[in-house]
Length: 536
Image 1 (cartoon, rainbow, N blue to C red):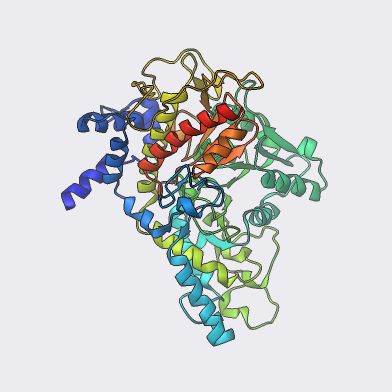
Image 2: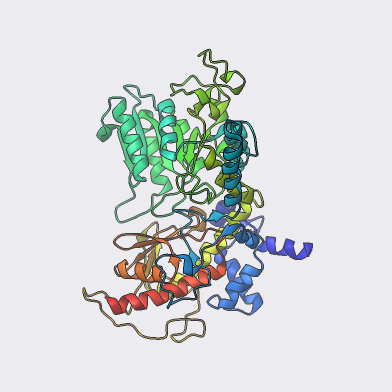
């Protein structure tokens, strides 16, 4: 059994310098392939086709972390409010591809929550200092485990507030504009809360966002930001930039930015560099301490599965632990051993904890505890290894069915012709028109009411084709309006989200999603496109 487990883990293994190997093509003399190549090898060894349901089932059978799905409450088709139970098996699991928006509920959460309710009911104020989660300091018990997920030391992490509140607290310390260094650099399509936080901090200091906020944009006709363009902008304007504040993983495209390289470039120009890791924490491997990141923040309800609106993460690099930066102070940022002397003589807590203002909400602790226990059963390296394979499998099935025959995307821009077997691992095999595994069996009408070509629907994947430059998420842009496609997916229990007019985001979170989920999800997409064509 131990030998079999080792073989399974090796099949899913992810190298720590995988990105470098992908670019160079070799490692220690051995060629390193796109994750899809690994999937193809496994399929060939098993005598299976990538488009065969049995391949998905086999991949699940050798998945070393497949058991973690059992630690989550995975919704059934019958439990989703918009599922049409005439189209699906009510007792079957839904297809949950929305971990980039809200992760699933850990099964232990309810048990841990009831413990806190009972503690309050039976002990009242004594709950502050008793039980598994003493309300007065339970958040500190999460710092070490949370640090493992983002590559930080215990004293560099705090769990508190919401993401945007934490970002404001960090900008108060790190954005100290001068007449010559007063700008903040963000991406042009930053999430609105980040944009508003930066904009308001600039205004708070009496500057004009029109001149003090640098919004770096992709090249004309492209959707993804090129690393060289980010670095060039830092080199060009770095002397006037006070803070660089980017997202580790871009929420719309799923693009993962090169955090260490950008951080180093910013530091060379004298800038502070911070990151919004809302879509990165629990999704990709992070090494915040090693990379020298000044500050970072993240929510815990996406890939960290701690429930809607739960407390957020806060990172402050150890080099700033004894800083005298301006900050908003609160009672809970005072050292615990003298906090209750009530002498109003400030004595800052260690590292990130000095930024706490109020005590953490005790009833938000159980979900974080339940989630971190699951993460402690594996590692981010193992999670990422599965994610690379899982999302590449999803990409392959979508391109096989809906890829444009004469075009491919590079950096979000249409580039030339796709080879039958492309460098990015496009699938060779063509799905039969009338397959045995649920493939489309009827022809759809060619044109919709507004002239859409429903017979030749194609999907552009806006996310980077290089798997090392994306997380679990793929952003799918359809050649037809997605209104009815999204509605039909919802009827079939496929949980994802839309960005009108043409984009659907799908994110198979590797902690609880399976290869069979991906297979089923793509089949439901086929059915949904057919139904949408009839409606349109």
